[in-house]
Length: 232
Image (cartoon, one colour):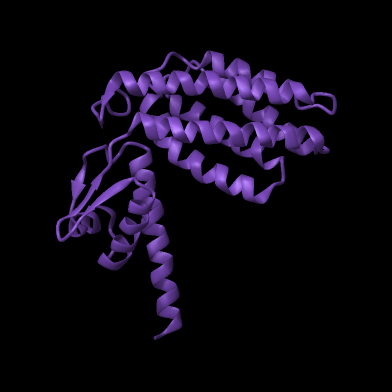
């Protein structure tokens, strides 16, 4: 087999996977959405092999259900799944905070996080909450990476990516995220050489409150299958 052709196929498969995954997480392909391989190929301009490989990867992440000889269906956003992921993410976040507290902080890293908090404070009342959400995502990613534990970071980023679906879903169902923005300023304030235990406390408290809020909204607006959509 031509190795260059194989590499090209893998590259197209990865691109198809990322494209379909983001479409599901963002709500573009809502729960219950059904499509055949051919329909997915036409919609996203990929050939059949990369799409099939992408769908199998999405199935392994429990984002889609594969229907033999028919196509795939986007799985429902389930409260129990989100609750389990929230518990794991909180545990990882608290552990990361403890490791960050025990290490040295780079001034440039802290400055980057401060810029993100300031950006969230400026955009918190905007109608386009997507801008705020993007900054929030970057905030969490930058903060977690400060722990420098590669395995923890990898697991966290993967789960956080899957939670993005719930974050998009609840984005316009929740109150304006003023409380979260205030908490991010508190977390930033604890990013000091003497912050120590306070960083763990405020980050843990934020995760608990925000997770409870998100799960309550998902439970309220879903019954096994998502009925609301982004922007509802």
